[in-house]
Image: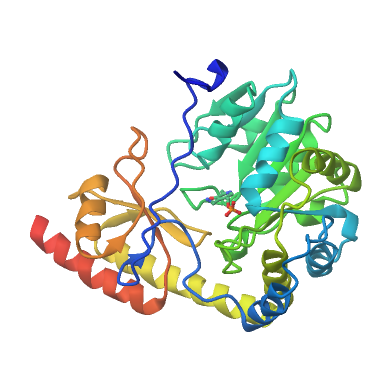
Length: 353
Ligand code: PMP
C-alpha cells in the first residue's frame, strides 16, 4: 500500500553525489571547497551555538546586511535560504507554475528538471550547441521564463554579461533567473543588472566559493517586489529556514573578503595548471570558469575512469546519461590533491595504452 499521492508516483528525484565520510578519500565529486570555513565564520558560529535554544531571526537581517554590503545593495534586495536549492524551489513553486513555459538548457543543473516535474512546470529543455555552449539567441525570442546556470554545470562554460543582459532585456514580461553558484571562479556576476531590470533574479550559494556546503546557505538578489514575493513563499513553507549557526557562518564568510579572495585565487590557479596537465595528456577539457573541469579522454570511457579513480581513493562525478557518458566532472581540490590525481591519471593511462 502506498500512501504517496499518485501525482508523485512517477517522480524522478535528484540524485546527490556520493557523500563518503572517509578522510582518506580525496573527494572531488560535488564541487565543495577543499578549504575550511574562514576563522571569522567559525568565531561567529561559536558565539551563536549558545543561543541555539532561541529561534533564529526569520528575516536573517545580520546575514542579509552582510550580503547587501558586499554587493552595495539595500537589504530588502536579498533573501537568504537553506542552500540555494531552497530558493530555487521557492522560485519554481512561486514563479514558474503559471501558463508561461520555462526554458533551460538540456545539459545543466539536474535539479531544474526535478523541481520542474515536482511543481508541474511546463518546461522545455533547449539543446546546447555542439561545443556545449549556450546560444543566447535561444532565449531571446520572448514569451517564456528562463533559468540558466552561469557558469553552466557540469560544463563550466560561461556567458558574458552582455549576453545575459540580452536575455533579460528581450522580454521584460518574462522572468529570468541566473544561477551563479560558480560565478566567483571566473564569471562576471549579473547582480549589477538588478537595478535596471525588475524581471531578473540572481541566485548564489555559500557552498562553493565560501566553504559552507555543509551549513546549507544560499541567497537570491532581485528588486524588492520579487524578494517580497519570495518571502511570501518562504513564510508559507518554512519561516526559520536558516539556522542561527549557519547564518553566523555565512555572515563571517561574507565579511572575510581576504580569505574569500585568497581561496578562490588558489582554486583558479590550480584549475589552470590542472587543465594544462590534462591537455598535455590528450584529455579534451572544456574551458572552465568554475571550480571543476569537465573532461574526457579518447582511450578511456567516463564510467571506467570514474571506477579506476574510485579504486584508488579519488572520487569524481560521472553522469550516466547519453550526452554526458564519455565525460567526468572533476572538482578542483587543493594543489597537492590535484598533483596526486595527476600521478594516478598517468598510471591509469599507461595501463590502458
Ligand atoms: N546551482 C548549481 C548550478 C549547483 O551546481 C548547485 C550545487 N549542486 C546548486 C545550485 C545548489 O547548491 P546549494 O543548495 O548547496 O546552495
